[in-house]
Image 1: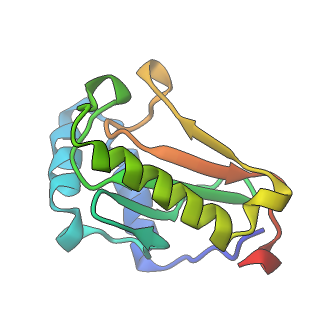
Image 2 (image 1 turned 90 degrees about the vertical axis):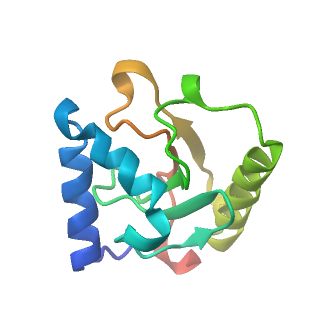
Length: 137
């Protein structure tokens, strides 16, 4: 399993994700993502102009990473088509993380949730692996 940090940053992120599930507090999630560069309480594993990747605060897999847009985008259905660079940057982020963690050899899944399966009101991706070994990092 990946070494889990119990840092204050991870605890704040976990609290934020729990609070985001309450409809009344969802506008705060949007504010957070609009100002992610200054407010982000996470240890970033990868970032580019449009995306930030970090460990999931409550992992369900041996490796469980979140890839989140820097822009406030509530869901895939509300994701703007433009700019095309946003999606090129998404694939660059995923490819860099696959290489960094050696996922090509052990296997991985890239998942996005929608509708009632989306637990927070911010579109995001999960890069996960059941068979990842920490020695790859």
